[in-house]
Image (cartoon, rainbow, N blue to C red; front, top):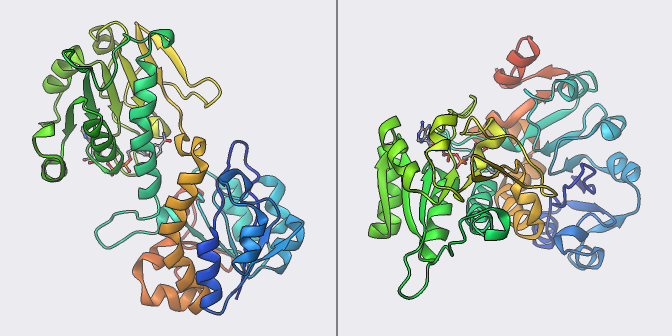
Length: 368
Ligand SMILES: NC(=O)c1ccc[n+]([C@@H]2O[C@H](COP(=O)([O-])OP(=O)(O)OC[C@H]3O[C@@H](n4cnc5c(N)ncnc54)[C@H](O)[C@@H]3O)[C@@H](O)[C@H]2O)c1
C-alpha cells in the first residue's frame, strides 16, 4: 500500500503523523511511504531524515494526496483539503466528526473510508490514541501551573517545590484519569504537596499504588472539593465524562473562596471546563485573572510541544497503521475490534453510531 503523510494545514498545528522510525517500520512491512516536504520540520524532523529512513519526499499536497492509498494525518482535513478527498481513499487521523458535521458529510459524499484516532477503543472502553495527548497535557499542566504562580503572572509567588525550610504550595488535582495521574506524578517528583480527587475509587487506588504517600487521595464530593479549594494554591482540572460536557465542579462562589494569587489550569476546557469562570484561551494569550485566581485554559496544550507530542502520538498509532496498511480496513477490523470501533465512514455510509446520531442518519457497518 502507498501510505502518505501530508503537512498539517490547521493553524498552530505543528505535529506530524509519522516519525522516521514509523517510516522504517512501514518499509519493513513492504509498504511505500510518501511524506510532503517540510511536514516534520516543526517537530524537529527534516526531510533528509525521512529520506534516510526510506520515504519519498514529494513537493505538493496535491501530488501526495493523489498518489496515496492511505493518508495519515494529525488533525481533521480542513476545507482547503476537501478537494483531495476521493472515493476509495483511506484516511486515518483525529476526526471528531460528531462536532465536524460538514466534514462528515464530505467524507460520505466523496465515499472516503475514514478512521478516527479518537474512536479507536479497546474492550475495556479505554481510548489508546487519546491517552498519549492526555499524558503530555497532564505533565504540561504542572509546568503551566508553576508558571501561573509567578508573581508577574498575578500568582501568589510560591515555588512549586518549596525550598529548604519553606513549605511548598498546596496543589489539588481534580480527576485521576490519564491526565490527572500524570500531573500528580510530575508534581510529586518536583516535591509539591499534592491531593488528588476522583469519584472512581479504583482510579484513586491506582494513583496511591504508583505514588504511595507522596500524594493524598480523596473521594470526589462537593464538600471535600470546597474544603480543598479554600486551601489550594494550584488547581488542575482533569475530569472527563465521556461524550458529555465536563461537570462544573467549581462555581463562581467557590472561586471567590480561593486564595488570592492561586492558579487554575483547566485541561477539561476542551469539554467546556470544570469552573463556571473558565473560558478557552490560546497559546498566544494563555491566561486571565478572575477573582484573584490566574486561569490557564488552553484547549490544545500539546501543540506547544510538537516534538514530544508527535513521538507520543505516533508511538501509539503505529501498530494500527501497520495493521490497516497490511490487511486493509475490512480484514484489520475483523482481526481487531478496536479498529472496527474506529471506523467512522465507509463507501458513502456513516459507520460510527455517535456520528450517525449527530448527522441524524442511520449507521451501517460493513461487518454486519
Ligand atoms: N487542554 C488540553 O490540551 C487537553 C489535552 C488532553 C486532554 N485534555 C482533556 O483532559 C481531560 C481529562 O482527560 P483524561 O484522558 O485524563 O480522561 P480520563 O477519562 O482518563 O480521566 C477522567 C477522570 O475524571 C473522573 N471524573 C469524572 N467525573 C468526576 C467528578 N465529578 N469528580 C471527580 N472526578 C471525576 C473520572 O472518574 C476519570 O478518572 C479531558 O477533558 C480531555 O479532553 C485536554
